[in-house]
Image (cartoon, rainbow, N blue to C red; front, side, top):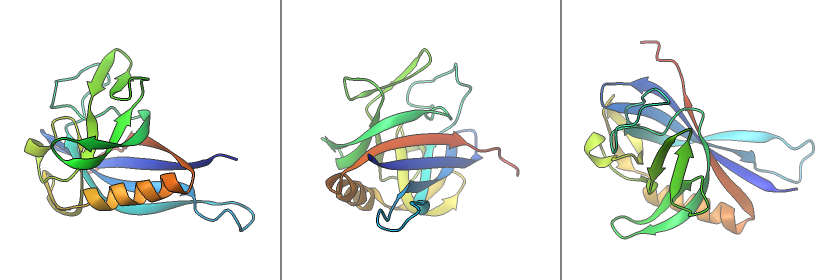
Length: 165
């Protein structure tokens, strides 16, 4: 049986420039107890560029599309150090969704839309719809490294929830 861990990003609040979400881990934590049960563990908040329709992309200003499923690896960014890196293609840097393409998409620390450029910002606290603070980049990398060492295959999924307010 393959051990799988999914990084689930669920966006719930949208503005003209950003999308605010929650990052969780979905996986079977305990392979001893029967029956095996998946758990969903909350990790932190995410801030991304604004969500657009699936056929529209403005470079550096568009979140990854809802419904995207991709692979994850650790990447040593020249600018940010070790980060989580998302990809779908064999080149290990490209995400393709329909006819659209993103490259070098990382999960890293930051505070607002100026820090995203197509990446996912991970942090502890929301200041408002367009700002988060308290980087969780190192904690995310550490957790994912540990799970890779434990034999988990890491994937990611992005979901857009309906904004109700």
